[in-house]
Image (cartoon, rainbow over all chains, first blue to last red; front, side):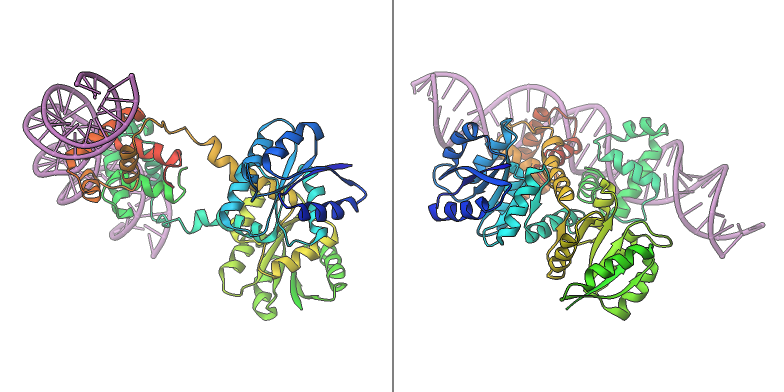
Length: 213
Length: 213
DNA sequence: TCCGTGGTCAACCGTGCGGTGGACGGGAAG
DNA sequence: CTTCCCGTCCACCGCACGGTTGACCACGGA
């Protein structure tokens, strides 16, 4: 039996959710709360497996409440429910520790499925949210990337990586067991190939391109 | 009507998927292929909306095929199907441009649901994959961070940010409309407070701490 | 009121860095 | 075999950078 805590400031929403969930044989609504502070207060008492959390609420909003619930050791999982899937809400919710993110216009079947999945320790996001998360995941390497030129030789790439560790020419020379004149040559070629003025700008490119992180 | 292309080296799997999908009224299997190269060859001819792609295949594997399909302008969406949800597979598939990632033991209902979602331009991952993606998304800002000391004054932080853009002292001075002696002072204090030797190492900390990205 | 802090500026000096131009050897491609 | 690329190394020069010391002013709290 999956115990659920409903958190939403609108009475009507709580009632609707309760009707949907109580119709399921393996789900029971353990209780509800009208804001984040009340949710935290009822958490220990009720010991729910899953918390359905609205974001916009008076007193303490859903994000702060989510943060606290995930921080304490209760093990309760949080699904954030919201009307609009604004970017900042999504990222903030995930950063706060939410295991799920659904829109309020999601079909009931999706909601109960999400509750079962989350109770099982996995995570589930609304499809549009998933798309955005993937975009962010793959964009970081693609859009941000100033496309580090591949005509860097292996040795030059190696030197660039050490450059990006903050090492001086002599330190790099010691690390690679060569003379420091050699490193000066490599660094010079790296700067030329990257089209930058000094080692600082080379390091910037190294980080932005994902060569190091 | 959603047109699907099946790509899997095992005849039995293709047949099974075809039976599942043809039973749906709004989905039709446009064709199939036994490896990545064959899939690419049939892509233009068939013009599918969604490609169901296995990873392990002879000749050209599913990841490389996914990369190429997503790179050309056909607009076909790719769902990667695999038996094991190894980390490297997941990230590689998403990086290659896949819109979905499902395990082969997923129920048929989840598969057809995923096809409809992906055909609609959204994305859908297996729950366990979603959990991992979120973990990676939220871990990166927490573990990597060397905690940039907060005793930097606002102005010093501003200078550090410009340092991390690769600007020289004089350029920063022009940008902030102050003398370059001032910037030298600020830079010096930043180096001291960060406990580093030169501006390069300061930039490294700026990136690793997330002050810039 | 006084003092601490943050921001601004100055002069000096040593040095690591970047630019230029060259040299040598080895391996791969032609 | 010759050519080209890569990695290694050298010398010279100019300069931006980093370290040091000291100074002034505005603001806000003790």
